[in-house]
Image (cartoon, rainbow, N blue to C red; front, side):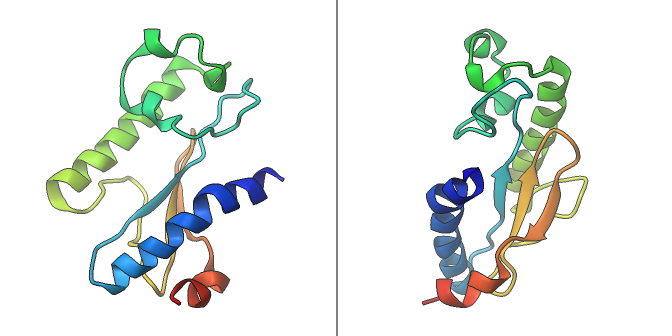
Length: 133
C-alpha cells in the first residue's frame, strides 16, 4: 500500500514533466529520498530531506518522522546530499560517489537517497512510452 501511495502521489506526477523537459533539451536529474528513521511510523515522509540539508537539530528534536534516527547517520547522509546539490549548482551536474545518470525520455533514471550508499536505477521503463503523450 505504501508503494502504491508513493507512486500515485509523488513518483508518477514527477516523471511526466521530467520526460517533457528532457525531450525539450533540458538536462534533468531525478531523485527519491528514501531515508527513514527506524522508529518512525511515517517512513520516508514528504519534506524529510530538509533535515538532512539544514543543520538545525533543535528545530527537529521532536519530529516524529525522525524518531530513532542516529545523529551520525543524519550528518553523513546530509553531507552527501549537500555535496551533490552544491555540485549541481556549480557545474550543472550533481556530484556523487555513485553514478547518477541523467533522467531522459529513454532512461527514467532516479537516484535513491537513503541512509546507506544511494543507488541509481531506471525506475519505470514500462511507463516511459505512455508518459510522453
